[in-house]
Image (cartoon, rainbow, N blue to C red):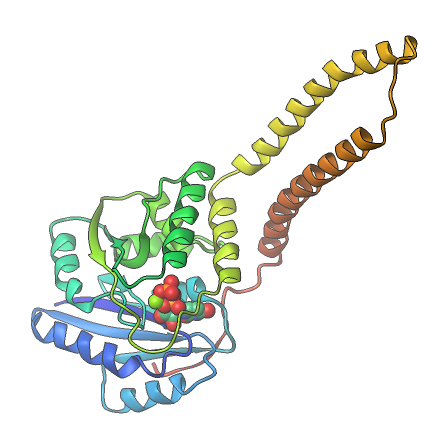
Length: 307
Ligand code: UDP
Ligand code: MG
């Protein structure tokens, strides 16, 4: 009997767990040919998430949980679930019912047809806020133009991965994980399905604007050195411009036609000061990644688990 592992990261999701758990169990009632397990990764929740998981697990043998020692972030939570899953395929999905469990049978069907990766593209529901929609579009736009992996607009973390792909991802020792990129990057036979994201069942989004911006930086820098090249090109461009400007300055000096330069000097100093800081920042981000990687700290720390 083939086994499917469902991985669900949960950060302050007390109001969603019993709903999603019930819905997934219902889906598998109609898939009697498959064994399954549902692995919840409690990502350092401050609410009753852990208590709820323990309660549900006491009368559901399919439920496994991992409790992190603190909040390590969504991507690390999904990675942990993948590390501990032992199914022939692993499906990752959110705890808040935005990823419809009713799509699980379609994903399994495609997997059975021979696809190793069945990923999903989120189409917008009417209720999603204008701000979230625009920032998300902008994120994918920047990401596609600045990174080396081609990510479709609306790529989500709701996907099925064959055990062979999971094996590859387990072996990548990256500290700053960006799964959407990583999954594209590994290759294999991939198939995409569209879905309309439902509204969050309970609670509010755990991705603040700050977290989203950081996520965007992680995504770009994990898959591309384009920002570094961009910095270098910018340097060449302005060096060239200044070469044109220098003869003019000398000419003006010799002919004593120079005019007072307070405004122009200040403008150039401020402008180039800004550009230099941006470039330093870009260098810094890459250096920070090297620093993090070289320390080899674990991606997550487990406080407790029930298996
Ligand atoms: N999540 C997590 N750790 C975090 C933030 C989020 O495990 O630090 C989980 C969260 O519980 C949910 C999933 O990641 O299951 C997606 O988060 P959310 O629904 O808040 O993101 P959105 O759908 O708004 O992009
Ligand atoms: Mg959500």
